[in-house]
Every structure is written in structure tokens, then in C-alpha cells.
Length: 237
Image 1: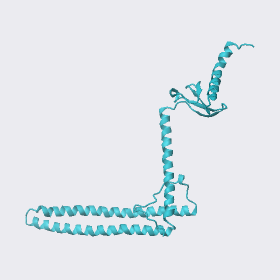
Image 2: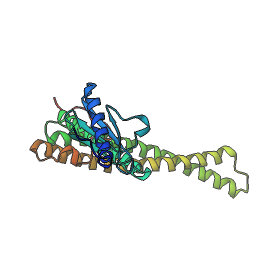
Image 3: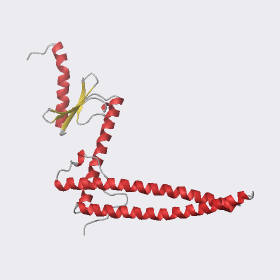
């Protein structure tokens, strides 16, 4: 038997060590072999798991036949890790949106049988808001009347060059504050009606798409609110 030249033996030594590591790990009964490398790509060792001190190193996973089935690049830079985390979070948000869209689609189909039921629910909700507006307008009229009365009394005191009694001034100030508050409430209610109409328009469009089978897939459309601000009671009988 001829011995190998020293230089050839040194050249073959890394491969021999790698083969021995793989064989040893496979003989231990592990279903996979993982090899870890340094930054230059040199294999540092193989086993059934990566040692803690080499967790950030590049790795290569082999099956029991020694074939590479997975590998990762060298340790990521902080910027790469941040970008990777950002992408992961983006995918998680998208999955949440898809799940919510599917839930809302189901709620929409379970609540209404046809588009006419959606219009009826829209009408009832708007009528409720309009009723609230009427009540606010009555309150506004009462505040304005109290303010006119207080202003008249204040004018009388000033005409006589007399001091305005605090209760009279307080009544004027209070009625003014109430008037402004009620006016803002009425303006908000009118905005609610506009938003409600827009919401029901979206619901009708989505409902028609779902019924016709032309609805975009849940992962390709932004989620819409299935329940308007006033709530969605089942319309089916």
C-alpha cells in the first residue's frame, strides 16, 4: 500500500474531516445534518444543530444522504435584519387584513339576502340620525330664545347705566355655550349621514361582487367595515 504525499494529504484533510463529521452525525440517528461556516465560507463543523456561538454564521443543511436541502447566507447586517423584520411585520399585517376581510364578507352575506335589504337598513339608520338632528334643532331653538331674552335684559340694565346682575350675565353666557355645542353636534350628525351613505354604497358594491362571484380575492382588496357606525342588525327574516 502506497502512502499519500504530505502535500496531498494536507489538501484532502478538510474534506476528510467534513466527511467524518457528517458520517458521525448521521450515525447518531439525526435526520438532518447542519454545517456552519465562517465569513469566508470555510466549513467549521457539522452536526445535528448549530452551536450557540455560531448561530449568526452561514449554515447549510444536508439530508441523511448528504444532499444540501437548505442553506442560509452569512450573518445579516443590522440593516438587513431590520429590513427582514419589517418585511415579516408587513406580511403579518396583510394576513390580518385578509382574515378580517373574509370575516366581514361572511358577516355581509349572513346579514343580507339581497341589495334591497341593504337599502332598507340604510334608510332606517339615516332616519335615526335625522331624528336626533330634529331633537338637537329643538334644543338649539330653546337656547337661542334664552339667549335673546338674556340679551334683552342686559340691554335694559345697560340703558339705565345699571350693573348687570351676575345671574343674568350667566344665563346669557350659558345659552351661548349651549348654542355653539348644539350647532357642532348637528354638523357632526350631518357628516355621519354622509359617511353612512358612503359605507352602505361600499357594502352594496361588495355584496354584488360576492353574489356574482366577481369579488376580488380577500388578499387583494383592502378591508371594508362590514358594520356601519350605527350597527348592523340582521336583515333576514
